[in-house]
Length: 494
Ligand SMILES: Nc1ncnc2c1ncn2[C@@H]1O[C@H](COP(=O)(O)OP(=O)(O)OP(=O)(O)O)[C@@H](O)[C@H]1O
Ligand SMILES: [Mg+2]
Image (cartoon, rainbow, N blue to C red):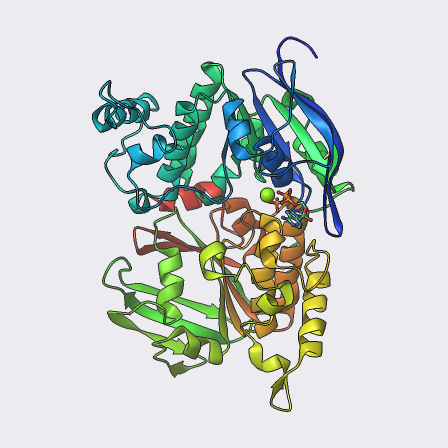
């Protein structure tokens, strides 16, 4: 191992029932760099991270840290060795304050042996300030945005004297602005000599931030190389293991009569006087920065949030859906943005989760039919290419991206006439994204209608017939597929 290598991953193998999550993976990470780890959903990225964090013990292989062989039996071993993780799901003590979280497990004491809160609050405040942030250290963590929680996690890691910081899809839930802040922090940490392992499905980010990149596929190490030696196309090919073709396989379909018409819709908190309509067979995009009110618009239409003013016509009739269930029964569905909270029951099996919304479809002669559940579960696993050993596997054991596919499956099974997709491809790998776009094509071909909320402009431009742009609760304008461009959308967002 060369001197400037901080970590050598050597022949790591990790097995789960029915899955070889990592298969003799070996590569090295250079000190003071941002090292990206990429691969399709289920490739083994999070598993590798969990091994580095001492959460899992590998069946085979070793880690060499600063030239010294390490075996982590538990997370505290990894932390003691200087490795910290900001997880895909944030793990902070929600009711404790920012400072308490930063010092959790390593309290400072006064010479009298008392807990030295004053000093801890002071240091915590300094750390946050050093990162150029403004977060009150006496605020309970539960009141922070996800972005700020991440920063608290980062501070906690620095405070534990970690030299290697691992970030598992930190950007998946951030706004553009928050993302810029995070990038600044990552660059700052690198310049201070920290080594950062960075997982993301957004290749733009990888090119922006990383010095080197490692590609995993099906648990195998495919390649490690400097980022300057690879193109976007090449990375995609290495990830999916085949030529990918068109990233946005849009098909233009005949568009029918108006299915939904919203006029002068307002809610108490955010939405102001929004009018829009959607036609059968159309893919309508909703663009805007996070906080523009896109999810709120969907929630208001779907009867989840109360409407203060305005009118909704669905299939020509005025509707008052005051509960989501009513909207669902009328053939309207939603793939929610926050799938962890709104989407899945982690300890239920994949098929139970898939069959949860369209429960009536698995009832036969008045009884729930396990056979039908099995059939539907299998069908959607195949259709969406969900990487899972079987229909009975609990959702909690699926990789992040594969969990998202399960949420999408359950709404597809409901067979909604009008389906809202809120950030449908977030956390989903490039190959699976194309699968989802093809599904959108299939749905509209069958006369279904899609309203897609997305922060990824290329995706909206690539897949939508029309794009509505929102800003601060208002509709700023509307662009047809032909006239829409990134610049025009951006110009409307201010
Ligand atoms: N605790 C577990 N029990 C059983 N199988 C697991 C467990 N953790 C992960 N797996 C399986 O191991 C494989 C690798 O999963 P992992 O979470 O490492 O993927 P990933 O690369 O992080 O994917 P994503 O991009 O979707 O987050 C998957 O097939 C997953 O279902
Ligand atoms: Mg993962």
